[in-house]
Length: 405
Image (cartoon, rainbow, N blue to C red; front, side, top):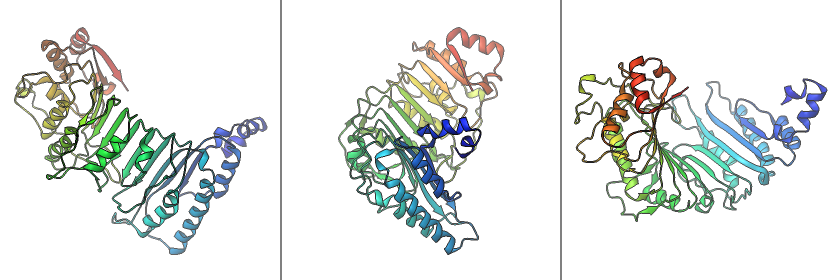
């Protein structure tokens, strides 16, 4: 904003007369800008504020106590200024993950929690619509916003921060992320039961702990949920995706989403918090393409198991070629997976694609032969360019072909 205001007198007048241009506030360890934040609060007037507090960093090797004491004092002053504007908070995005060179949490991590989040225990944020908090593997944090957040619609929790069940009443979009410390199954059930308006649920990793002696919970009806996103954090252990899915099945045993029509599956390696995981793709043997009982890797079983829980979906997005395996084959089953499926979307994911590049054609043919034809298949542009012209022509005769960037 400073640069815009100095382009010309007219630009400066426009910038100063547009409060929303000053409403995005960013705080980080790399940039101490107390003067800028004070100016932004003044010039944003009554505009709602979008606040980002990025304290996700590795302690420098040259760490000095005086330096961090000064930063902590700066953070306390800035947070006091922002809490004075709680009635204007529209979104809050907080990441607290201060770690040492060997990846262990530092003592500053807890200190920053006490400065940033703990003072919000009894806070009321009437205009807060979006809340995203990253705090990995911590227990004992007190619940925040006990005063209420009546406008809150989007919540993403990476860790164990508690925002209190009453704050979920108006939430429509919920994200839960596995970060070393999982929710108890009963707590997960209570959170979802507190979201009568929930329309989208996203589960990343295995954020819910389901022990072998898990409590028998009543089936929870979620009639408003129309889209579900599941992301597996795949490790180098080839059996992990299978284990992940088996643990995931416990969650769906007591969840009912009768109106679910869109499912997003991410089972390829993805960037995770706090560090990425990588798993090599396993090539597919084209000779085994039509073997109805063949599964090339454990992820196939996982995808098949997940899809069998959601027969009502009409739109499916996935980033693993295992999807094509299970949609081509009826594995020991007398019924077709996802009989109402009409739109299939392949995202680039790990960038792997079988050399033949004709899997979409096999899927379209198989679904049509089974009496459950697809209406549209979407594939990434990079794979579209590698497909043979005759394959594209045959595919276009069966379904509408979409190309994504």
